[in-house]
Image 1 (cartoon, rainbow, N blue to C red):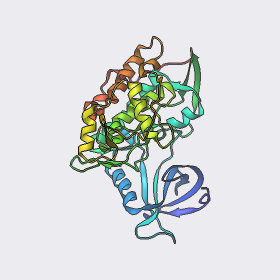
Image 2 (image 1 turned 180 degrees about the horizontal axis):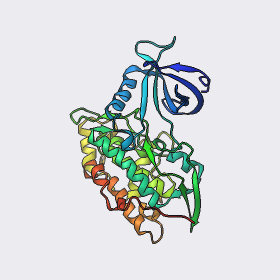
Image 3 (image 1 turned 60 degrees about the horizontal axis):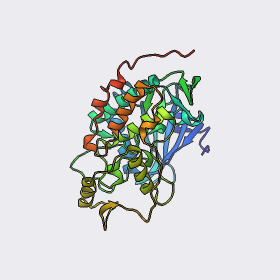
Image 4 (image 1 turned 90 degrees about the vertical axis):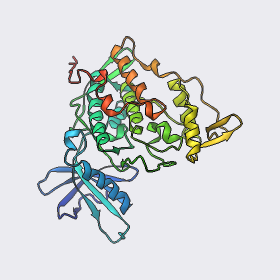
Length: 355
């Protein structure tokens, strides 16, 4: 992964970038720290052997939001294009995107601080910024489709945990700076209601909305579901929904979702999925259902409200918002424009000092 470190690459615009260090890898490429001609530290995302149409889809999205991105808590893009080499073809090449260098993601912080979580005032500040980014995308008719802790990064490059404190069974962390931004638009799409997204897989499974599981395809409310999962994870430090990491993982997660929320998927959603030709819904002796493959349901799963901390009135507000985001039918979920006005985000600039 570090084979490019020390090299200087030239962009299609003639800009040169010195690759200084390898930062990490994801499903679709690698991230490097680079310096431009002014020695400004930036991040370069390289999508290896990407199909030209996939790279163009991401860069087209970034073009649509580039002018206002930074003001809307979205990572600023400086440059993008193709890195041509002897393995490039007319349809496949190494695509690159140059963006601001950022600090750790929420996922990285929670992973490093095992069994720790954020306090309500910090969830309010961070969540409001994420909601600002998502509301902006919503206003442009865009869906992100991969909203999760890995894709929300703290802006301060060397941001670290400023302090830690315990209260009862909970360990709280506070960052030096709570400014965050949304990253990774590799799966983002312009949502056109007339287009069919039936049987299109989208979203990381732990944050995937019910309509996507059922093969109904994503829509403008699918990101709202992921946002609810993100808020829960910041509050508890734990995943809200999970599969069993086996071949029946989707079936497992469907059961977990219904058990945790104490809600059943409305039967009319199964009917709708069947009518549009979903491959995820089957006819059984009892009617329509999600494919089972002889799966045995999980038992003894605690309902979501058992995670609210004792005497935490603000936490109750937060969990009411989370449950609104996790309505089974996407038409019953709020828009981000409504979420940002939720009472939980009142006094968003409140600062709590920790001794």
